[in-house]
Length: 363
Figure 1 (cartoon, rainbow, N blue to C red):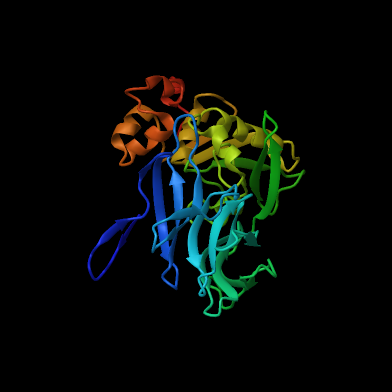
Figure 2 (tube, helix red, strand yellow; figure 1 turned 135 degrees about the vertical axis):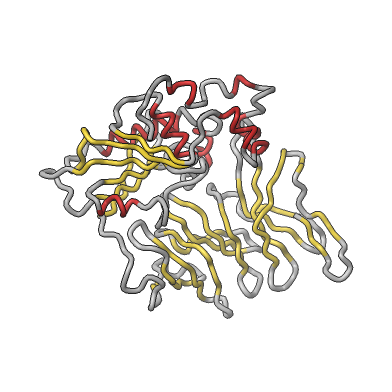
């Protein structure tokens, strides 16, 4: 992270990419209105043995000194925004299947959750600092303009009208939050979207969505991977957040870090088994779909089980060794998987291609 004097063009490096704790990534810098500080995200790159960690970092522009603003927050914060008086930083973070809005006091470090449900983005404090305007979506509704208290007095956002989808887009599928238990006892949260007609007398076929990333989670409205489209056609959609998902603490990331075919796979199966215990889902008609890392998981599933009647793989990873050499961020994956040419043992058994055999079920 570099500060540049626009008059003299003098450059000062505030945050070095290489440090005593390993490689670092600084991003999303925001200068405080009083010009004293810069707030940004800071993430470690991780190693094959230790998962990456993200936090909100504060630099003093006069001294160059930095400190962690959210050292006790066990989440991955994003998009810092300053209050008009420079006393507070607002930000968002995936949290338990939602994208929550937070504030952190610069002087005391006290962190407060302002909105805990829905997927909140694009925070915009009012000039007096008392109100936050933002966009908020859900699994049933696309982003809508909302406002809420900047002090945390009320956690219920107020929708403003007219909304950007006023009189139009909304899903008819019934949305439920469900929780399963992994083999090691970890709670696996999922969204379940059901077609209106699903019942014990008319159970719906089920499609499992595996999310991309792999660092990520299912939170709000998605214009591309939208479960409501399938619900309109009579399908139920299960959207699990397995190991390596964010929003459930660093432990959940570590459970799948560098081991994509282990806990992430078995967590998805555990979420599926729990969902299929319901009478309104048809266990004899199941499918799985995913893109990017979700596509990797679709390929992995195709090589490890025959329980799905259909599998859709999109923009997927087939073999990690050539992926390392052809993607534009191949070196980044060395932090998690190791250099495939120097430490090939870390890649053994992690590529779906090694297990797919002669299967023809991948679409």
